[in-house]
Image (cartoon, rainbow, N blue to C red; front, side, top):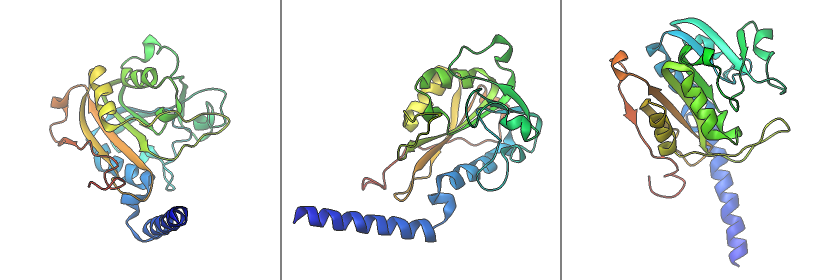
Amino acid sequence: MNKIIFKILILLHRLVKGIANRVLDKKTIRPRDFSNAMLKKYAHHFSGSVINVSGWMDEDGQGSHYKKYFTKHTSYTVSNVRGQGKGFGSASLAGYQEIELDLLKDLPVSLEKKFDVVFNHTTLEHIYEFKKAFNNICALSNDAVIIVVPVMQQIHHTKDFGDYWRPTTMTIAKLFKDNGFKPVIIECNEQPFAPIYCFAIALRDKSKHPTLTPHINFQMGAYNYGSP
């Protein structure tokens, strides 16, 4: 009897999730919509040189490109790693300035603090040497780092990359601090119906961005576990 009840509850759970994903605000439910909306909200605070790390062709998954979000950029670069299906050469074919960058290798001195803004979307979970990759991303920036990473999501992998990590929001904040950055934005699309992303921004010097109001919310998964 317990097995039957369990199966019924699972079916009901999937039914509710299916309905929610169709009728609720996609900016709250669909993680990519959420992270894109957050980037649009904050990108105008930043100017100068921008790099989208491991950005493939810079596509935002909604028919546009992340370059358009950074309306005050003076230069825009995409990095990719060689030897993958979505690797080096993809962005240049799409008309972007592209550099080869492997986050698993020591960062070349010439790239240290080379960019004002470093943006990375859903790459870190696929890198086993997570901390080294995170450190390299931070080392690229002389001002701001913007990261999007899943904190709760079904495992997904291909022949080109695995799927290893789901860092908590506190882990992300601590890693920023370890690299000399101050976390100013940490927020998740908190809901029980779809994968949950963390959107995070950290700054080397908060005083350079007086109009950016900090908002730190470490909560993640409360709605899934009954304690919102």
